[in-house]
Length: 80
Image (cartoon, rainbow, N blue to C red; front, side):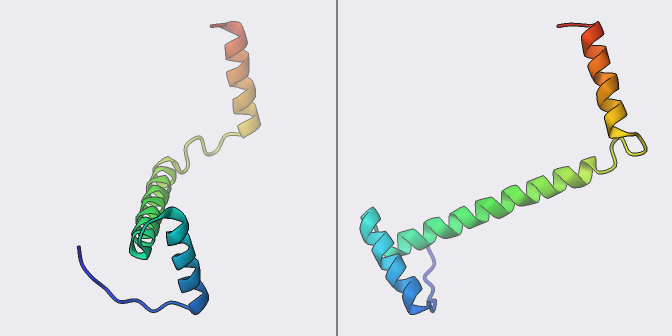
């Protein structure tokens, strides 16, 4: 593990201390969890952005409502 020094607003430090006490862990563990959570959220957002970019334009040029109607008509003609 790498050590680092950060500066916090007083209110944020008080909140971290209280959260650490509530969870029964050191303040550094609360920060590690928060950083890990933030990284995971950003990675998920990046995956979603990549998926949206890869599928952009699929079906363009068609009326979405007409596509829905056509698909529903197919389902009604061929029940599962």
